[in-house]
Image (cartoon, rainbow, N blue to C red; front, side, top):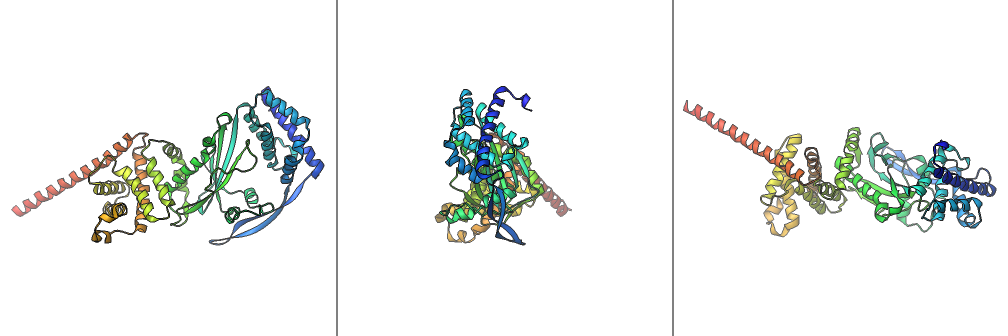
Length: 461
């Protein structure tokens, strides 16, 4: 309730509200009490079991586009007592940002409301609160969206943490992203392709609170680091391919409309494999492990960061040889740390032991890991291997699949058995593996001795 708000809060809110009502009056005088325009949009819809085709839709919408254009071209230069009062109040509270930019951002966000001219309390109040925070607390909100095409997840929306959400694309987003009324005719083919949304898209939405006084390029691009961590988390859960499209970042201050801080607006993930689908169990696992994965990936020292990063790097490679090296580096980080002798044998033995502890059947992983390591050595030192040995190597395609699968499984085993911030965690876990190997060998030797003794007794009898 307004009575509970402090005097500065209420004074600034009232000034913002008076400014918007003054713009609303101008809009009503020029465009009528209920300004509308015809919106035409195109997006992809499902037309078969595995087929999508583009379709054009049209509807009548509130004419926010021409109202915003009119403000920028005419009304912004006209005198306004409401805007002058807003300027005075903002200066009195020592707001150091651009007041004109603030007004443009406020106006843009107001025009995105379902019915701006109605000034309904439940719609306008959260908007005013955000802009009051920008003035009094130097706090701004940025919201970034990334579309995932070819990714299937069970039961969205899925909240990973406050401000990070995976959800289905909304209908209003399809109308907005696919609009064809006002597209720039000089768009490139890629721009045109990016602007045809799909009703099967999943959206990763990242909302961040930033300090206006400490704002720099690094903090403003924090959402791209979170995106990369999310891609790592996805890859740790499942293989498969999809593409990621940067839909831009919107701020309640700074600039109206969407901004793009990444040149790489379109990324293909795992193009060599089939589609990526996460079931309910995997989604729950992703939610439960997310905070730890984020902490690992934001650390400069955690031993699990590099292997996880290499798991993602491998699926971004076009050449399978490069992917094999990425997976080999990740596996070596976990399996051969601190050891310089007998790397191939230790690499295969430790890796097979972990996989055996997880799922049994040690012989097959041991053989595959040795084959994988031989191919890795051939890629790095190909000229030093003889033709006979080279002819026995597995294919790079097979090695790529083995490397990704085993790196994922082994990474999770280390995660469950030694989540520590420093390298001591790695040493402790590898010691567990080696202790298990020694115990197993001792047990086998004991069993073998018993059999020999038993055979001798039989022969003696």
